[in-house]
Image 1 (cartoon, protein in one colour):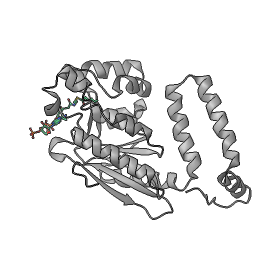
Image 2 (tube, protein in one colour):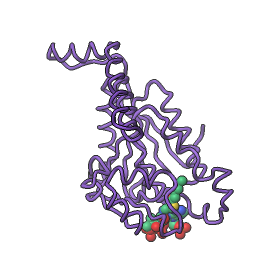
Image 3 (cartoon, protein in one colour):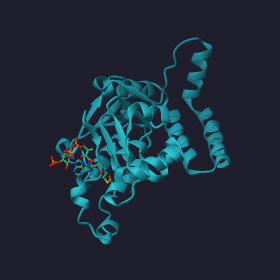
Length: 262
Ligand code: HXC
């Protein structure tokens, strides 16, 4: 499929490689329109289905990861445009279906739907230039892709409530302090740092990687005892894999592990 609003490439030289998706509407600060969301969904599913890909990196440009849903598109919407045709709100579930880890490499603005998109990813690495916010309140709406649910889970109720009610932005350092991002790196090395993390994950056994992604997401979607029971079952299941034999054998033989399922 030829894409117009995103760029895709494959990086890395290990057994498993990294699929990179770059949001590419620079003139509109990568504002998310239906075409971009459709292309993003298709690219994520294509990388997820590709056995040579272990991880996916999602990024934007120096000025913006994404400044939110496209306001010029939404401005004239009726309730039925938004609800029935599913404009703007389509494909967010597709993003959540992807079983391989998705690393958001965020530089510049990540606002509204852009912040929600970043929060949906599994690892969030920020450039020192990153600015996060949910400014929907200033547009007379509320977030529509999980912002009111994921932001409080990430940074706590008080800070999330303040950001959501005032629309104020949060810089990269505050985002790291608050637990929104895993780390902050210089803007010039953002993609390289994300690719290093992806490479580390690609060297692990894929069943463990995919199960950890599933289990951590479960932590946000079920009660503690259900999540812990689910974790125990997958933990037991991994004793049926070559990767468990290899990983534990390599430790005991004091050598690096070389996993089969990569
Ligand atoms: C459409 C946008 C846009 C957006 C920026 N642009 N954000 N177009 N939708 N979300 C366009 C501008 O209109 C402008 O186009 C160009 O990008 C550059 O933006 P400027 O405003 O000139 O840049 P700057 O002064 O640096 O300000 C950057 C900014 C500001 C602070 C990010 O653009 C801004 O506040 N944008 C809106 C952010 C926002 O409200 N996002 C939430 C959207 S609602 P021209 O043609 O003038 O050059 C949402 C709901 C999600 O996301 C629902 C999901 C289901």
